[in-house]
Image (tube, rainbow, N blue to C red; front, top):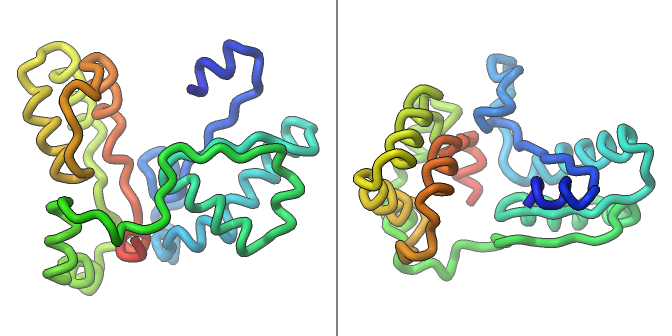
Length: 193
């Protein structure tokens, strides 16, 4: 979508949450990993919007959020209703508000039954779902260049994200996506979900 919008002449800014593999410049700073999506909503969303408006010399922007990005924006508006004055429109793609109705999700069911993340945090770990960049690239290349790995990794995606049909994935895009996922997060953010 960013590519399409930029080709149509829109100025496109893509935000990235702290804790993902693309925003870890300060990952060793004390307290860096002590956040959940409520802090992302309270501090990061307004900072992102303010930075974009300043850099673009604009009064308002169109905010398109995907998944947690939609959730963060809604929470940011609850925290700071005046933020809405800086938004021309909000588009929520795959918004997530609650995971309470997800029944057939293996990982969520396991985490509900066993406090593994709490134990992981107790042991001092601050981050989760970070893979070495070389591993992401290798897996992405294997999926992209050979259909062999597609079904295996689709099974992993189904396990982590819930079941989807194979026909919902474009093999070429799936390899590219896997090369960038998982992006990682703080343990607190995952516990908050």
